[in-house]
Length: 330
Ligand SMILES: Cc1cc2nc3c(=O)[nH]c(=O)nc-3n(C[C@H](O)[C@H](O)[C@H](O)COP(=O)(O)O)c2cc1C
Image (cartoon, rainbow, N blue to C red):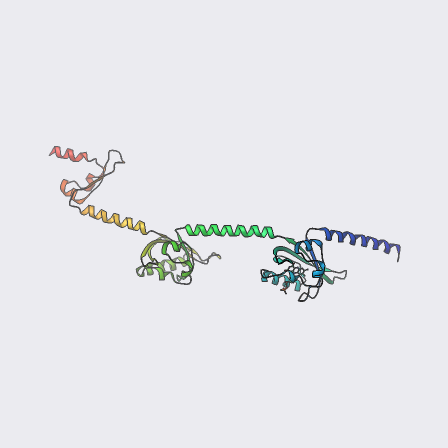
């Protein structure tokens, strides 16, 4: 062996020694398998570092010659496995988050980086993977997701507005949880049914027409009133407005917002009745507004006009004093 070769060998061995001590001392778990076969019983494990043993409980003795699939368990995602297999079959590196299991059966999340390693001839000889424990981050993400969901649900439960998404023909594709508060119907009951099944027969044509018109025109429609059936058989008055969101890929429908105006309607009906009673009363009636300067008359009924000879038009805006003056003049 020449001196040059001898020196090169020393350098090479020193490099190897250095590399080995790095690999053995890093905190990330490292696992090396043969390049082929990647199908069972491969890829065969030929090396793991100490961090791998610390993270998983498996020693070299436990895993030598086995497949990394021993780390998988009931919650390991099939989609993630498919993605790894596809990459390995194409000799492509892959980075993925996957749920794995330790020797003692406890689970943890890892970010897995797998790369193929080639020899000097470009021939792939091994796969090397570096695994980082991301359990804590996953747990935080999951908690945040759950909190957001709880918050969204709480908002939707509280809301008195009903939101539905319907197709042009009125088929319900989504109904918000608030439908329970207003009509005592569970949102999932409405799915795939036609909106008209819940609308008063006399209002169906108008509602269907409004939905169809909205589906063929962009933007927001005018609010319409309709009666919807409560689970107890009574009718609730709703005001509803449709928005065309057919072009929005996350909606693809007409969004119908509706709100309960039953009690407002009841008050309006009562007021209308009282109005009629007052107007038809055989007593002369005056209503004044004490909140305005000089307490002016704002209403007189028909009988008042007959008794006094003043028309409603003449009387409104005046103070009641004008009647006393009128008496004196007579
Ligand atoms: C170097 C290397 C390391 C791997 N490490 C893991 C691992 O830590 N966890 C895991 O679930 N799968 C790991 N795999 C992937 C599995 O061995 C297997 O390729 C994957 O489950 C897809 O194949 P399958 O669909 O036949 O199960 C690794 C693969 C290689 C080549």
